[in-house]
Image 1: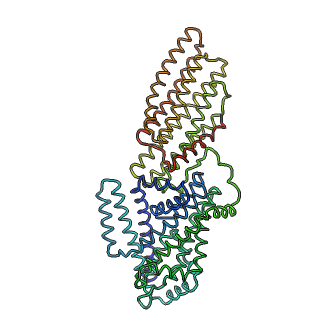
Image 2: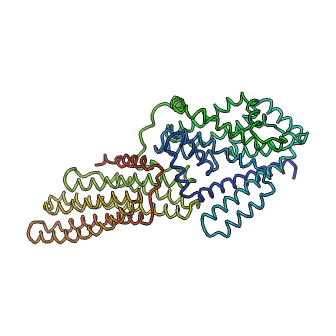
Image 3: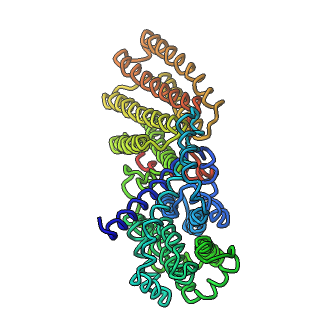
Length: 575
């Protein structure tokens, strides 16, 4: 095998190990973080400063600013986050992604194999899920560094190549070449962390004198700036087909990185001098990896500090580039919140699932309200077929999304139970919509026959409808908030419904004997009561999930409650 082939395969293999280690570490960190991940994400919907902090923390866990940006774009597209909030999170994400470069700057070559061994043993022998996740974090951390070491070893011969040394000299003299090179590298790999790690390792190779770097800090900075530009492509791709607000979010990411790179391209010499001043001292090949990491962090902190108070200006710029308002909302039967690009982040995906279930519950609740209105003659028979179809289609989308989330294997045991419980909740909501349709068909058939129930029978049915409406509302609220007392009240009130059903059936028979009700309506009356009783059974099923600690994943309770009020009102027009 030729030297060139060996080098290419070594680079490819080392890069593959690095990316695998980084992705595995991200998954394990999310599992180890558990509920803390939800607490971190809760900062996303607060003020810009907290949004930037959340962006940095989330990116530190996900090990990818692109992943954070894609997640934020999904939230914006779903209407769960405003554009200014999203922009602040993206600013923070650019800071968070520099933590990988800081880790790469540590010299732990002699400790890589012990780290891999300790991580493997901890993962292999641990019974507790959290310890297994920590073990996987350590193991993946070791693999990540081993990938870097492999890339470094195959790149050493390049330092002695006159052709390659001349090329690196040109990059140092012409910053634009370095920026283009960094952008292309990141476009190909789709990970700025990976390309910066390669840059750190390559820059640590000695030049002809054996002391200075083959490229030097002034040559590395333009490539670093190009890496920051290249990473914005992922966000732009993620915004394709999304709302205008999502496109604006992606463009703000590009403007942030491109504007900063252009400014710093004219300040390479003073910037390099500043980084040299704040970084450890020593031979260049020994400290340049840390210098590149510090340059990466300083660049993003400086850009964030400049842009954070200028978020209104950024909003104005992106709204000028992407003009107009979003098109009218898509068909109500299509998911408003679910986003396949976010499925790799379990907590965020569960948050979107919760919002979609809340929206679906609004449709089912409105069907029950409309059914009661038909019974009391306060409205004509409504076209329930469309609304029922909406509930069923949403249920299918939600179930498929949950199945995909579970099948990816990235959930903790608690998250798996939570997600499976949410699937049970949406199934019960679907059944409630079915019961509403069945009961309404019976009411409409009864009315079309020209025969009418007595006032006493109507009052009894209205009372049962009211019980079903209240228990549906309370059961959904118990899952939304985790209110166990409310869930217990739903189960307790089920007994009232069962007693009412028995009592009203007997009362109807008594009225028939007394000639107060038509005997031919007995079957319809009993069918309506039975349908309402089955609805309450489904409400109990939802409440029982709450008692099993199944709750909606909320990030900001006050905002989410306001949103769910809005979404519940969406299908009201079917009445």
